[in-house]
Length: 355
Ligand SMILES: Nc1ncnc2c1ncn2[C@@H]1O[C@H](COP(=O)(O)OP(=O)(O)O)[C@@H](O)[C@H]1O
Ligand SMILES: [Mg+2]
Image (cartoon, rainbow, N blue to C red; front, side, top):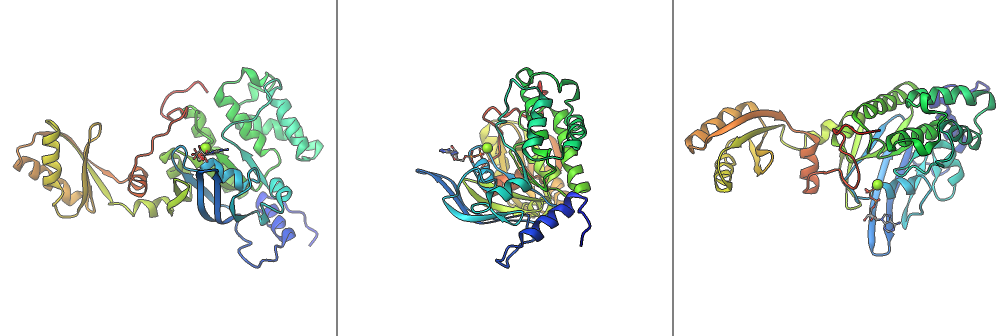
């Protein structure tokens, strides 16, 4: 077969065939890890992670700060040696074939390592040469990428004048210059304003659908994982505590949640919770100072009128009664015992940022 591969997906398969790993295992997996462990002295950052990400998937690692996301990404991208375990990326062993792995992947780390005295365009040129992008293609590809990350107008300014969000977008563009088949994005939208975030999501989806690019992304944002990912692993203290498609994960918690604000002090709230818990189909009920009472039910439509009757019977005045579908937030809470709260300098995605 002398036909040249054209799409990224073709090139991926070609890479795999060329690599032809002899272990006879899952060479079709884009990313595969067995028992990955990383300890930094006493700190057990990653505690035995197994992964199988098929080509063409958008796989998400969802976890709060310190759960081990970056450490895992660094091991999978050959930047950090695992304490234990093994991983193959694009069919290559991350320990013994690190050069091949690096050629097959693109990486945008959480901390963009940019030379701020360069202009954005200069940085992308340098990156293109490092990756042996054919000379004749460099300028047009850079123009396209700048357009995609919305930096065309700022391309010839020095990076030192870029906002944090602009730097993140440039870093992403630089991870894409060599058209990698697998892209690792470590918290790609942390610190981005809502519009840049949406643009980036759209672009990830486009690269995935049109070119078959596999994505491994980490996030602290439930909404991001829900919208983008085909499969999500919830990471807590260096371990995967839950994994599945967004729908599968949501199916692990009660289908519906009824929210209601009950008037009165904490004792009134506790009385309400105690009265609501025994209702048919109710699996859990709790009170939160901000959210009010949440009643988790297998069948919200049956439970809703009973909630009303029960609170009336208890003579507890209430307002803001509403029925919602369970969200990934509820899944995360059930799997880890805490609510995810993006932090450590990570701007809330709902805030209008200055990116
Ligand atoms: N180079 C390092 N030396 C020591 N501890 C580290 C190092 N890198 C990460 N850690 C620790 O490992 C844990 C996981 O960190 P990290 O992988 O960065 O989590 P995340 O990306 O999910 O926020 C944290 O407790 C962090 O402080
Ligand atoms: Mg991190």
